[in-house]
Length: 355
Image (cartoon, rainbow, N blue to C red; front, side):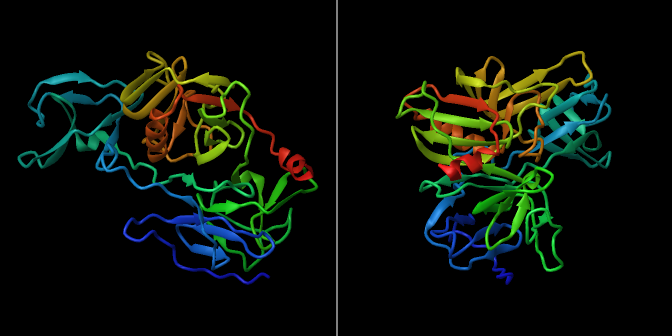
């Protein structure tokens, strides 16, 4: 039973999308998929339950470039050092879209335009890399909890034990399903992710089905944000349709719990906060923003890849393609999108199994 079989990553033909499939019988198979190492455990998964969505044909995301300004750099009116200094950028967490580039051969320097009539030297801006992580559309209702690895780590052969010498390290964002759970002597929950391969709860973000809040109608669209697990689930009534990871507010700037509705939406918007403070930030052209709790929003975050962990000033950061999916899906909703923010108790797993 410790035999490990690794296959190449499976892609949807012509689309380059890897597929996560749900097993029909926990006793007969196990399912783990990593975009880095392929399948672990079962080599013959049954029909697809989880599918990474295709890029929308009119998506604003492809080709976008963003960068963070170095503190206290000058912004010039033209891509050359002899042009007028428009202003000094000051210091802070300052992210801008790259609108154009120019190669000044006389200076031997590359320039980036961050606004009309605003140019910065290439050495004065650090280009960002947008996260490649994307959640899944849920095509059939899950038979068991599922989730993703949050760190690169090896599985163990029993709860509370160190990984064995033959264990494979599962990369961050590997998709897993949960077949069983136990609590070790120190009180940590360990999840069986198939064939007796166990992973400690701190290395995973786990999604379980939760009942619809009574205020939400049985045909209404809503998103559940779990502050403990740092993930989200989209529902149509009682049907799960999408799931992924988020980054909510850090303890200093918490995302508050409650039931809200989206009251304003923007395909792109600028976000500025904490002016005059050490944590001053400017995030330009934030994609697919949906405000639900005053100035707190669901939105795409192109400036980090810390999904599954708290990382924001209070908003619910989503991988850009996930935010795009939620934005257009909810645009067809019969209601203003509900957003239920709460903190789950991982021990509910055991209660659900008893039921």
